[in-house]
Length: 310
Image (tube, rainbow, N blue to C red; front, side, top):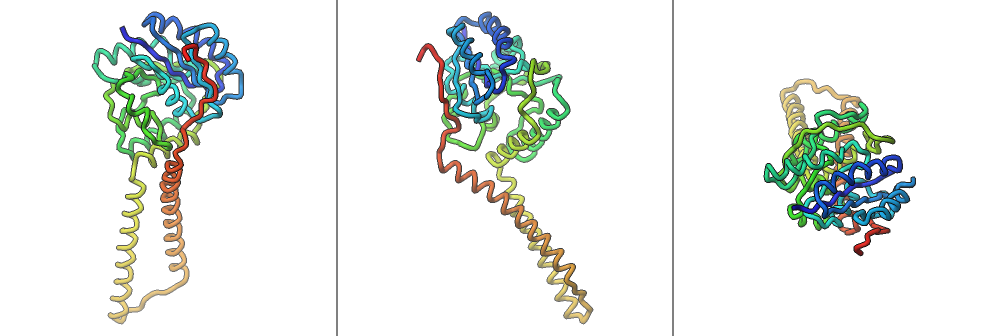
């Protein structure tokens, strides 16, 4: 019989936490008596932490990590994974779009396929058009520009064998994400087709801007393609410039007229300046990440821990 940890990041979820616990508790108790539920409160300004304290007082198997401020979902998941101590670890959202009743199906798929991770693949998603667009942009950017290849439609909801990720949890990387690191590592997984419910309450914190930021984080942390693009573009511009100069010289030597004019020169210079500024921005992004990595700051700060075992 396996033991089970459930890691749940929480952010402005006061309306859903009681219902989540009501549905999650009987599921994990049916699966195993050796379990823990780890809520990671990520700097919410509502009553989420107060509700979690009540749940903690009600059930000795609940543990609560309160972050000092909002560090983002990925870092909350990382904090929970590092704190988890059981054989299998469930990662799920707190909004009940990930159904607790599907945990058993994920575990069964992982064991039957003898892999280290089972991930929910959403057959249906009751998300807004804006959320679907943001998700499509994120996966499209990630798949095309990085070396991480995985099926589209995979969610955060998953079950992982702790032994398979122990070394990844201590990777000293500031700008990357633990979820991206799981795909990068090549850990074996099986997708499990599931239906995703609508949010039980509230609105999603993920908008198009956040998804674009996630995509850029994944691109600049796990791909050198932008750098290669700069080199290739520079070579192409250099070759075209050389050919243009050669063309002018040949016309001059042949005694043919050469058209001159400020407008063409200004247009060419404007184009080259624009390309240079874009490339400087891309270089700045990489240099900025090197700067952040050199500081070796923690990815999160846990301010309060509620755990009877500590």
